[in-house]
Image (cartoon, rainbow, N blue to C red; front, side, top):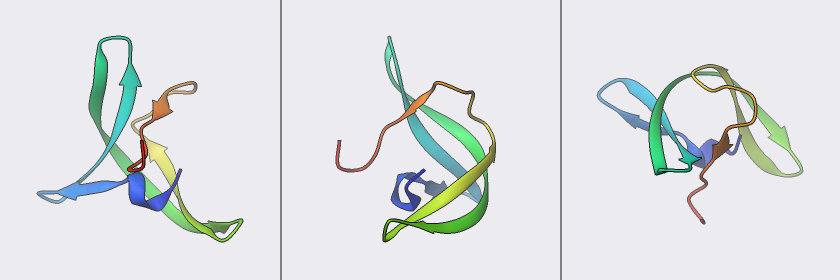
Length: 59
């Protein structure tokens, strides 16, 4: 996922996911930083399930 979608607060890392009820903030465990097509991406090791849509800052 894009690195800038990751938020840090109080020593925890969060992303916002889109749900039918609206945006939901999720605690995640980030992994490696990767470069893809000139954009910095971050691997997420846990905290998300397949199919969840992460809200990016430009949305």
